[in-house]
Image (tube, rainbow, N blue to C red; front, side, top):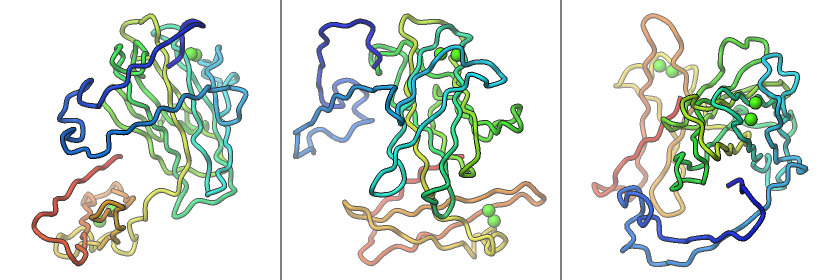
Length: 264
Ligand SMILES: [Ca+2]
Ligand SMILES: [Ca+2]
Ligand SMILES: [Ca+2]
Ligand SMILES: [Ca+2]
């Protein structure tokens, strides 16, 4: 959290089910390792991959846009860039500019991820008295149309295909209803290569349930398999449909279940 004052603070550490709905946590009686680790880091805006909101930055001309920086990860790609700011009023908009470097390249396509850490807008969350109202990713050439847009009060993150070497803007808005006493926010950003792409050559045949496009499974560390795809539903008539097949690996049986997570 963004601390209000210099001084002493205390950390209360509990198991997940103590503070939120147990149904949203791993069954505590099945956890065999109850060790935990706490890391405390100071976020220094002087660091390239830490960006702090600097007003005035809600000018539609973007003249005061803050620049998101990147620090190379020796294991590939970049480390997480952390963005944090204050909403000075319910009408506050914070605009950031970012340009994902062209080197290294990302395959199969560069994707800009903007992740919103767990926050509730109450003391049960990260200490902020508000959630973010809206985050919009915008091409400066068309300020009226968002490339991607989420309302974190409804959940979700941004994972949008983008072009490297090209500038984009990120608009961050307060929900606009009630101002709290500590209306701050955090956003984590990292470019990645995204998921394997839908095969354009199979676009028509994968529209038929009898001829789904097979996905390739990736073994999970704890057992089971995961399947990933980034696909398109192009406009047109008839509207596109996509069916994908999940080839079960050897050893799969009727005890296996399937969970699906999606975003758009
Ligand atoms: Ca601000
Ligand atoms: Ca602002
Ligand atoms: Ca299709
Ligand atoms: Ca498709």
